[in-house]
Image (cartoon, rainbow, N blue to C red; front, side, top):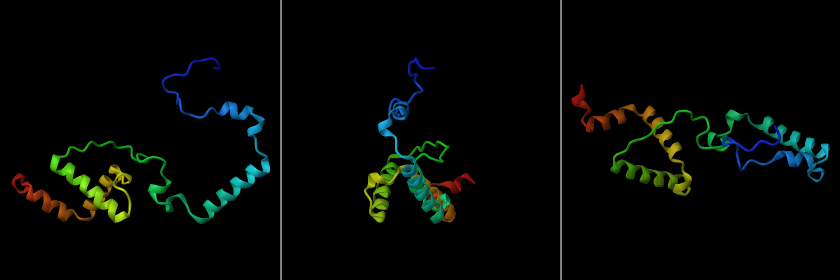
Length: 133
């Protein structure tokens, strides 16, 4: 419906494609568009499948493919430790700390724990888990 006001679900920052479609100055010749797209698509599909592209490169946002929302409640000492681990991991990667996603870091913690359940069990025992048997 053309004269309706934008609703709260509308993206105020989305590009208005209607004006671009009506503006002949913005049109490109079919040969240029088709040639550019088919070359880049061909290069991408010939060289790699989507699964071969690393997750952090192919995703659009940090939350992509992460439908599960979990809140981590940490004691102060572990919140500070997480910050230090993030800085240390960033150093290992040759990156700035703020460029290492906390979401990625926490997911890496889970994978690391899955690979080393004995170490995790040892930490839990040091916290007193042996008294819960």
